[in-house]
Length: 239
Image (tube, rainbow, N blue to C red; front, top):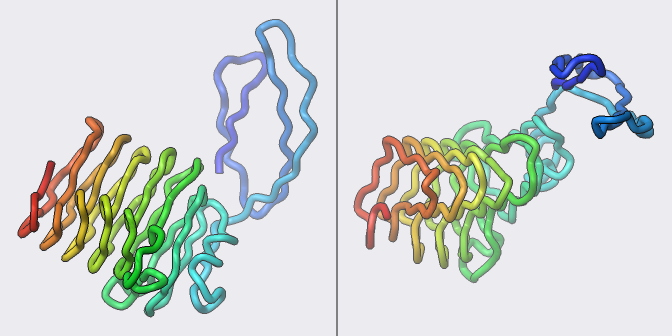
């Protein structure tokens, strides 16, 4: 963690790296070009190293682990089937499987048998990128199965998206600096596409789109699509 410190006699800020696992106090004051304000009331905080939180070894559900995680923490998930919604909110955490997508499944509460909410959402002003990696994401019937909202910048890496039903796009994006990399999208139903970018900067890299209703679309001039395979789409591949 770095602290930017501005000396009152210099316009150039210096950068201080704070040692972790220590207590600190923070205060600030402002300058309007004529004089300085009074110092703010000091606030204490503790800076610790990132943790790895194991599911189900330490907590029984993925959502419970995300809820207690802090910025930079990793939620490490053992093989198995995990049914239920996943809400990152503004948390900057990594959600990673221990053994990969062939043995670790994220599923909708009703297994897609009835319309439900989006299985995964990233919504809120996260301080750093989140990540979800190494899962099969399946059995969800919603307007969009994974929603990436404004001011979020997750990395979606090394997952398999299959057996999803979406009224719009399976993964719908309106965030900033989103990265969709090395995923497989196979046999998904959607009205629009497997991945849809409404606006914002998104990189779609090294993914495979196979046997889906639609491949991917973008309404944003900031989208970069590089080295993707799109084949056997039921309606269209890219637009």
